[in-house]
Amino acid sequence: MTAELFSPQILGLIALGTALGIVVGAIPGLTGAMLIALTLPLTFAMSGDAALALLVSMYVGSVSGGLITATLLKMPGTPASVITTLDGYPMAASGRPGRALGLGIGASLIGGLISWGFLLLLSRPAANWSTKLSPFDLFALVLVALVSIAAISERERGGLWRGLFSALLGCVFAMPGLHPATGQPRLTFGFVEMNDGFKLLPVLIGLFAFNQIIQDSLKPAAAPESTASGNRDSLFVSLRDWMRQSGNLFRSSVIGTLIGILPGIGANIGSTVAYGATRTFSKKPEKFGTGCDEGIVASESANNATVGGALVPLISLGIPGSVIDAVLLGAFVIHGLQPGPLLFRNHPETVHMVTGGYLVANFFMFAFMLIASRWLVKLSRVPLAWLAPPVIVFCIVGSYALANRMFDVWVMLGFGLFGFVMNRLRIPLAPFVIGFVLAPLAEENLSAGLMASGGSWRPLFTEPFALVCLVIAATAAVLSVRKPKGPQLQ
Image 1 (cartoon, rainbow, N blue to C red):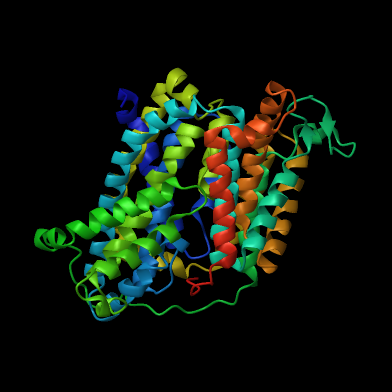
Image 2 (cartoon, one colour):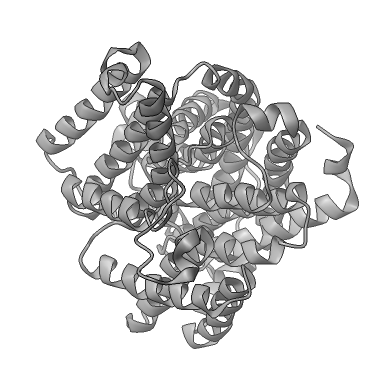
């Protein structure tokens, strides 16, 4: 870690980012992706290191903040906290809200720390390994990422084919602009502004901020069940209790980290898998869903561990594993940084800032949650009418600030409406974003591979790594089609 990480400016940004992330994560309807997308234009005047420290800390805070409303109101602030409601709310409703919060906050910290260890150990070897991959290998790896997130989306939004269609749409919308091989404009329809294609930032702001405001405005206000005014028991959890949970903590954190590394999975799936594994190994599985310590610890340690896991392929390979990671990839690009082996070679201080900032943000998260959890629950009752106007202003200003042109504002508004329609048609947004981000990388590597092979596709099927990736992608697609749907978690 560099000395800059512990400078007052960087520590202040990490503290601010973590606090804002917790607040947004605690408010149902607002998301970490929305917060980071809206903040990204404000980082233009910052150095790349400072901007990434701020955005990564928001990532950490937004995933953690959802446990507060999930526990006290049975209203998860983020999808990652859905599983926490199964045991957190029953425990809080039985008169122990402090213990439920204490277990969730402590498990979040430990999960983040274990995940940070994996991030530190795996990121550089993964980056070095990526230098040995050919263009066809990289193309096949991107294909696995696209199929993986489409396959996972069938579990949440109604079908593998919807996920694949969404990913394909993302690839289509990434095509306007200059061809990566020939440099010729394509699909610009006579608009000079389209020579650069659709910019990532207005697209993200439209899909995840403006779209969210439209959806929330159409939802009837619901009065949540609250346990916050109940028994004021202590947030403190004894060391003996933590020792009893040590195996659960480690297992769930490792599961969360590994699932975070896989492209397109996400914190909600990480917490689901860890919860199921913990219940399988538990001596008292019948207590799950009634306010069980093990369930809260498994869910919260796993969903926070996915953050560190997702950062591994992001900084090592430049492949985002989730929507927030796609926004972070945009932050790298905007600040002139290219994730991958060149980042470790040319900008090692940036790698140290990301990994060190992630560690420090976890400690800030722990402190802020302990201090402010009792009051943060009141934020969920803030009327949307108060939140919508400033969010809309930030959407417009953030889109315009990218290149000082109204075209990007219209792009943001258009993609906001487009995202709203996709949600109404139950087409998931995550595959669209991942497709939009990864399509240029896939096309660039495929073009390079074809030029190197004289136009032959044969290396895609003869190079071992590329062939393995194609088999994995095909297997994931086939299993997703044949696998019966499980219970809906959201």
